[in-house]
Image: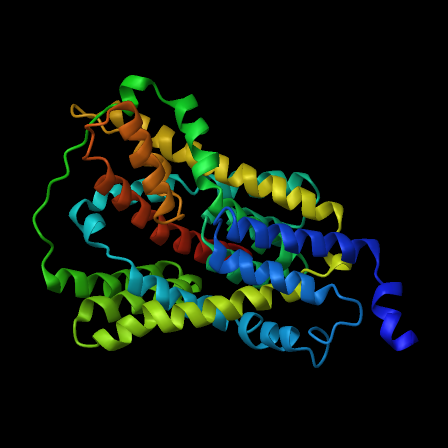
Length: 367
C-alpha cells in the first residue's frame, strides 16, 4: 500500500506548483496558441518530472537521457538551426541589405540585460546567458545557456520562448510610445530587382566565412543556419530541404521541448533567481524594441525619404511575428498602407542573422 500511495504522500509544495505551471503552459499553447510547438511539450514534460519518484528523470530517466544526448551536447539546437535556415527566404534582405543594420541595433536588450543581471548578483557568464534571451531566438538562448549557466537553463528557456510568443502583446505599446501617428503612417516603397540565383547560393557560404573569420565562436550557430539555407537555395536537393523544414524541424522540436522540461524540477526552478530571470527577459525584449525603433528614427534625421520607424522593432529575431505586428499596426493607422510588410520582413530576417552572431560574440567574449 505504501508503494501505491508514496507518490501522493511525498508530493512537495514546489512539485505541486510546478505541475500547475506545466498545466498553465499547456493552456497557453492550446487555448492561446502561444508557441504551441515548444510550450506544449515543455508543459507536459514539466508535469512528468515533478511527479514524486518519476522514472522520467534521473540516471536512467528518458528525459534526462534526452537532455544529455541532445542539449548538453548542443545537438538539438544546432539541428533546429538547419530547419530554420531551410525555412527562411533571404531574398527581401538581399534586395535591401542596408536593413541588416536594424537587426544589429535591436540587440541592445542583450547588453542592457547583462548589465542589470550583473548588478543583481549573477556572475558575468550567467548574466550573458540571461541577456541572450534578448536575442529573441530560442535555439540561441538554449545554446548559450547550456554553455554558461546550466543551473539556470530551465528558466532561461521558458523565458525565451514565452516572450517570443508574447511579442504581439509586448511590442505595440512600446512602439506607440516611441513614435507619432504621422511616423506610423509613413509608407515605404519596396523596390528591387529579383536577386540572381547565384547571389542566393553564395550568400550563406560568404556569410559563414565572414562571421567565422571575425567571430570563430559563432561558426556552429551561423554555419548550421546557413547550411539549412543553402539546402533551400541550391535547388538540387529539394527533398532534403523539405525534410529539413518539415520532418527534421518537427521531430527535433518535439525532442527539444520535452528534453528542456527535464530541468523544470521544483527544487531547481522555485528560487528567487527564476523571478529575476523572467523579469530580466522582459527587460531584454523591451530594450530590443526600443533600440530598433530609436535607430530608425536616428537614420531618418539624415534621410530625405523617411523610413517608417516601426520597422526598427522587427530587428529582434522573433520571425515572422514581429513583422506581422508592425504590418498590422501600419494598417491600423492607414488601411491602404500595403507596402510595409516586405521591409518589415527584411528587417526581421536580418534580426535572425544578427541574433545568431550576437550569440557567437558572447561565446567569444565570455568563453
